View 1 (cartoon, rainbow, N blue to C red):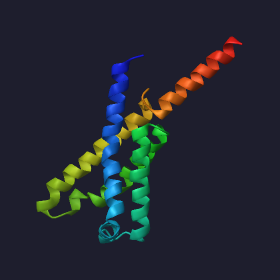
View 2 (cartoon, rainbow, N blue to C red; view 1 turned 60 degrees about the vertical axis):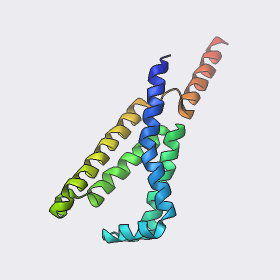
View 3 (cartoon, rainbow, N blue to C red; view 1 turned 135 degrees about the horizontal axis):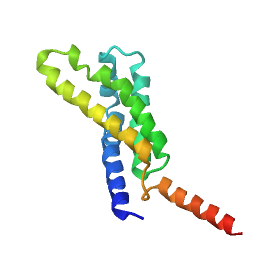
Length: 147
């Protein structure tokens, strides 16, 4: 067992998740503003889309923190980022004074998307519910083989 890698996986997973947990909670507590911002982008059903965003950000973010269904949560967030990033951070279509900030936000989301894909590939590490499940399942399989 490599404890250093497992600690790094835990810290990395939580660091990636926090932006979504905090953002999802903020959206939930400022629902009208969230819906208004979504509507300002010309999207239909802003109240429904706000709820979807909250469920994905808060729900999948919490799943990442605890490390349960981690790969699915990471894929869901990656897909979410793939959809929303060009809509909400279209740096190529904003006034010049907003371009740099929107490009930075676009690139931040792209980097997080890459982190989510890496989390999907590498898994959550030993310090996670998924990691605990794998050890229990492995132990069960080994004990079954001994019989």
